[in-house]
Length: 434
Image 1 (tube, rainbow, N blue to C red):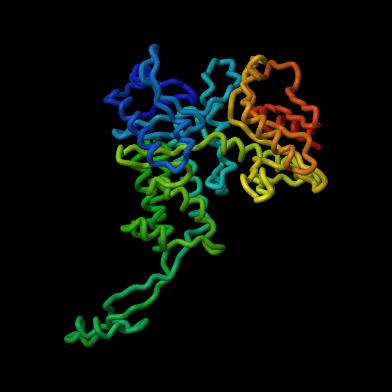
Image 2: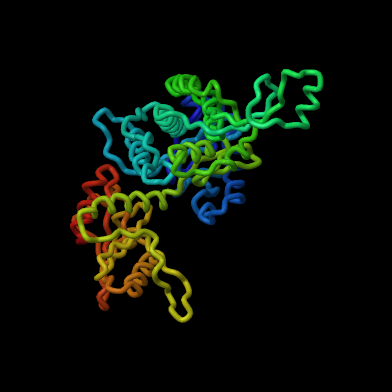
């Protein structure tokens, strides 16, 4: 498969997409039209209303028709095999050798993904990946293969399989109807049903199907080699002839919990399910992540780790208050609440790049300020609240912290999370909170 990279918020028209493809030696073949068709169908099919705002098709005089990805990043595979890698808009300090920063951005993005449930497997170790020459799809394949290797190393799980066969040794129970039909002239045979403890269980069949798929789809020689090596451990296991039925037959429990991450990822590859994935009539498929949700999850995890040595609790998506109390309507759900039972600190994450234009309130939306003011009034003992944004080059030059104070003792502080140095940045935030 051929792939190209674009950035979140980048305006992509027919000409710019074709230029990127030609630069990578890829035939254009109506790629822009297929991308437009994908976005239109995605917006009609997805359950998320955000898709209408964050994946848009627009026109202007200069560019003509163009598309943008705002807050959606990941991988799109169009009909025909072209993969479009959408990288998040993260400002990074470039290396001395002048690299364009894609490697750093991918590594930051992968570090953020580690905080998602679907990346909790022990083998999903991002730090050892060489991301320079791998697109996101190959990276995800590599992570999946690492997880398979860990399960194989611990030992594939077996399960009892019911087997019907006509054999010369009596075991299990005779199936008399079949026995009479098959052995009326064979006195030394028994048609029996018995159980055997075999590796041929649904989880292992689905992993085998996934490996067989990935060895075909991967363009990375190392990934292909690992797929083939791992398939040797599945030689005695059947392929799944009914993927949906096998997935339905799986129940993750303590006895097979090591398969949990693998099964969720096998669904990504075999059924195009999980995260904000999509498949439709265009024959395109996508593995997309909403950056606002991912940023929230990442910051919450960093903050929870930083607060481990304190008496504060870090709560996410707290639902303890309503805008109106009689009747209780319009639930308030701040992203993060830091609490010690005597007072609350409210934090809301915003995946948005602010700017240094003070006259236009640095790009902070009025609606966000109304929201934060409401949180302060409704949450008991929460006079100080924080809006958290990703740090960018523009805001890194600010000489003073941003804060907004009202006469009725509400302070909204703005803090910028440095995604290149997240632990140091969150430690700085911690020092302001406790």
